[in-house]
Length: 517
Image 1: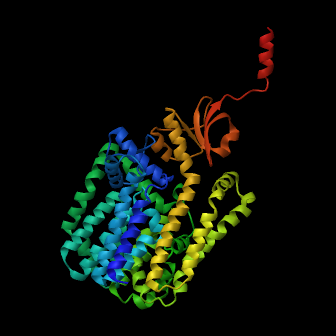
Image 2: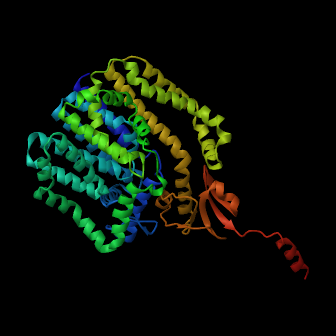
Image 3: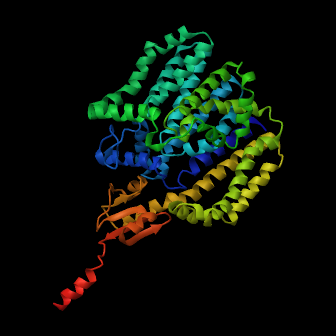
């Protein structure tokens, strides 16, 4: 296929996966709800320096993503589209960066496929339109690494200064990790290339450091001025150091945690990932493949040893792999092996409803209710469309057309299954919040739930405590047995109830006795 035709398909992949699907699901909890609510409370508090979540200080991330979400909501209104738009734009620029960089060091066709593999990968499709900081951060990490590599090849200082600038914006997005990834990669690369003196000289470039400080430092100073040591303790010590040293918020896993994450996260391109890993000894003779491999493996190893593990952490090292995939793609000989990861994934999704139905009795109450709510969505359309995708995956079309089929199939599967899941977990929370807003309920207690998206949609702050008689309570339906209550709203796994006083056994007798007197 011609480069022009492939560009059109790339454009539509970005349009569909990053933009047209921005509003098909409500905000997911915990992260999307937390970021969005913190942005909403910036307007309530008239404070655009310090973020709060449900009235409490939130030091999870620096300020840049909140500013961008706030700006987007001013333009487009406070809705899912506006809250997710900064991430979609960042992912688009991230894909564009991959395209232009790959075109510069290789050629246009490889550049198009590298960007296409990125746009259509499963894990990227999730992060790219989520109302969180990771798409923005990955864009800045990618840009800083691209600038650094071009500087190393062309020795033009402007690219080094751009590297410092992008690191500064990354530091304003998510903190130290934006510095760690390029710094560690360059350090290891310089040792291998026996150019450590140049590394030290570049790292302590005065103009670069000044650019970094101009971009990143003002907000950190302003935040420290407002919150003092609470900011230092909450952000640097708790949210960064503690995340590495300990299993933060019970997000833990073994040292092998990220192996299944990347195998699934790169779908449908896992075969190209494996091809790169198998051939790595042969291909790292190329300078960029060496540089990019250090980048990928540093992220993978560093977060594998981190106490806190979340699937999206390893994405910080994905960018060079999409370029390696484009290089490996040219050498693909078997369409079946190329398609096999999506074939296996599709078969798994086809078998899943039967497994869930047969295992229903073994699930705990909350999971059982969630599965029962999900089962009706496994309908004729579900089986029909997945069966059609499976059939297309098995037919030989030529590797370029097959790549397009696999990519767009992944886009459909991701968004369709995401929509199904949202109807079970996210939509009921939104509908409960709309009920509260419609009935002008101002005071709600949240019990055994952590769903900040409820605050976003209801436009209130909730209390988190044990309910008392008279309270309006949002809770899991599995906790209803603890109360005497009146149902106000109930759907899926959550319920909105009004707590009634518990009836004592002797109350009816006392009532009759009092009436006789």
